[in-house]
Image (cartoon, rainbow, N blue to C red; front, top):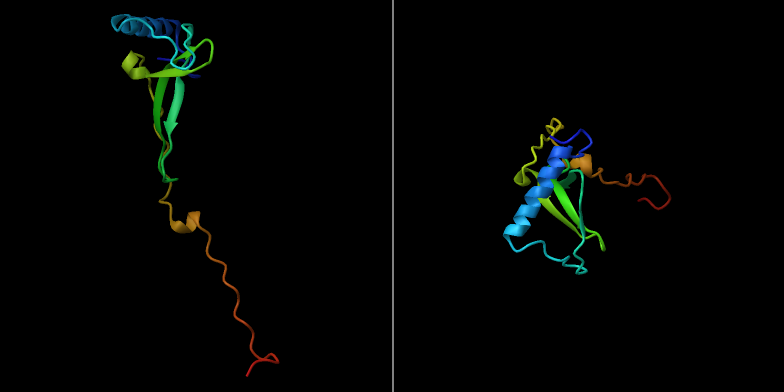
Length: 124
């Protein structure tokens, strides 16, 4: 399991590298960078904490921890799902849902002009 800050342990890092190299070798080797053509790359030493945004402000985000390999020349990043690569990730439980969100929480009430006072010089 990665450290609290997301850094992979040495064993996980080596496992991640070896797993990807074996995958690449089984499929013809690591391909050159699709952006710049470089053949150099680095393995990112910690989890990348992606999350998906949702339309409702009251719903928790979906988390998808990944591990990355990036080009040593242009920085193009390839990401692999950590669990599929074999890194056990314990995701924190989502916080308890807040009370349901109502339109009044998101949209303020409309501003309504006060009624005109009667009894002025132009009133009948």
